[in-house]
Amino acid sequence: MHFETKEDIDSPIAEIFAAITDFETFERSALRRGVEVNRKGNAAEGLETLAWDVGFQFRGSPRQMALTVARSQPPNALDLAAKGNGMEGAMSVELLALSPRRTRMIVRFDLAPKSLAARLLVQSLKLARNKIDRRFRLRVAEFARMTEERLAQGSQPA
Image (tube, rainbow, N blue to C red; front, top):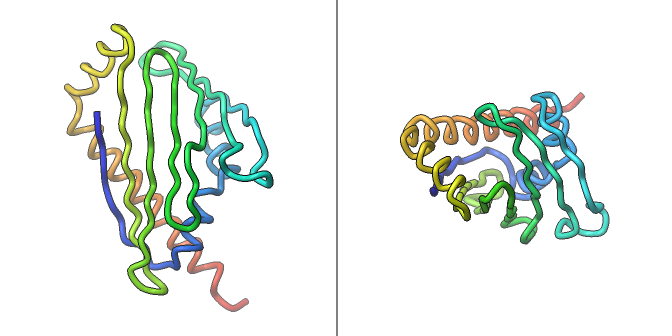
């Protein structure tokens, strides 16, 4: 399954890259939603050293996933890879500077089943593809809007 969307954000590319690599904020948000997150590695040693073991409930079953930073190309790209429960996933965030104060963020997500049980799960997700695609686009748009607002507030004189 493949999902893709893009959003234009009124902030410089370096600030947007800093926002998409603010993993502490993402970890806290996941913990608030009941996701177990265990980080491996240290961002000070480079983003490619970061990995997470993640546990969560999905459709009534416990799921485990290993998430790693596959590629980091500041300030233009970040790729994450996920493996677990017979599935492999990849998320790519590409940033393009449209102007010094405007950035286009392109987010791609691919999900590939590697077992029969995972194929059945993906097939059920395909039946709800329109709803999932709409939620994916809304989440990316919400992240872009919140990031834009947070960065605009931070640049206001005190």
